[in-house]
Amino acid sequence: MLERAELPPEARLVRTTREFSAGDVPAGLLSAHRMAEGVWGRLCVRAGSVVFVLEDPERSRSLEGGDVQVIEPGVPHRVEPRAGARFVVEFYR
Image (cartoon, rainbow, N blue to C red; front, side):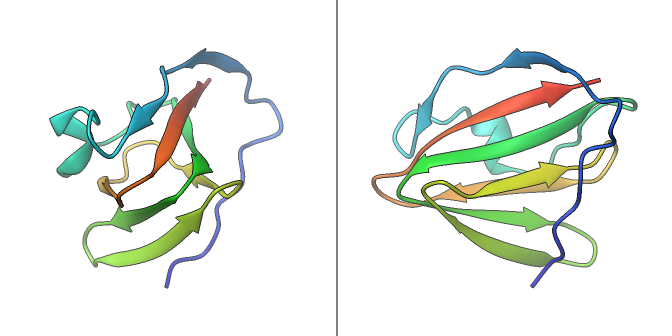
């Protein structure tokens, strides 16, 4: 199980992805990737279930509709959406 991170108080929303589903999530999100330095993310699950996985060491958290996971800059991670999942990623600086 992983702990929940918090956005820094000065972080401002700069972009939100389109809504993804289990059937159309970009391949890059399914394998280990990182937020750029200075960029924070928020995985916002709108429906269904998405498993958020941090790499090295591997830890995970299952998110349900309405749950949010903050993603810190430079930390390798991936998502594992389940059938029926709908989610967006918000980017902050």
